[in-house]
Image (cartoon, rainbow, N blue to C red; front, side, top):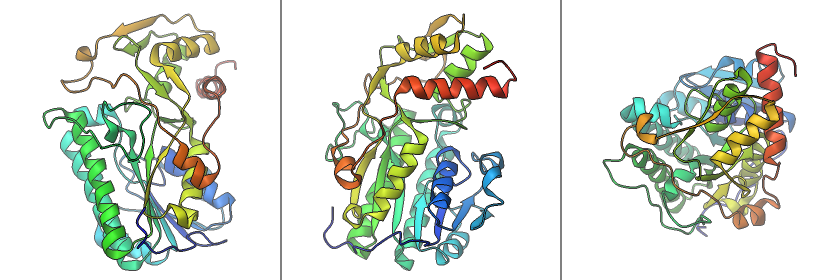
Length: 338
């Protein structure tokens, strides 16, 4: 945490807020949470991975505004930031399937968007939160601590390229905090799950739920022994708001997620049981699904001491409760009995 960073009250009551990527999965939940707290919210999204369906219930609410455009465009970014008192930057591309299919686009867009937004926010002196990823820890020892070195991997591993782009965004954020005294928070997101999360980008839980509800084989990549910690998106959204609102967090990097560990194979069996499905659980070698460099880290567990110290809490909704919610939603979408 850089002592030179401006310590501002980032989110006074009723302050207007800009959310880039606000039509995406996490962004739409964050936008809803901010509106509930009385903040006018301006969403900037190019809809490349976000969806108007995600924000359809919000568009008629007082204080909501949408600009369809790219956060990588300096003119659009500057115009949107000018009317905001604070900025949540979530715009970017995520998902191992997208990375495998279009690695150059994913890496360049993530870094370019973050670079532009940080420059604009620094010039306007707007308190800013940028979202990074647990991918920056690579195969490092668990639990992952914010003070650990980043380990994006070797350059010929595409997955490491995504991690490297996110890590470079973090370095840019800390550089702006140091050089321009930008009040910025970096939130390293771990596995975030909940309603409206798409499964087509390679996200494991929505894919398992869709397969179980449809009676299809539940496909586990690798041997399923790899573990993850899943946090509900509504709790993640609250954590992001609380971090930016706390001046003590400005200039800090903070893990955001759950620290309740579950193996991917156990998750597949849990989804099948909750759904009452007869779907078989099938193990699929990584090499049959992804190109070289996409092996999963064996464990991914955050240390949440800093998050708890800064916000007083951390996501804790049990994975069984989350799975039940998603199974009900999937059945309703398919017009099946719940």
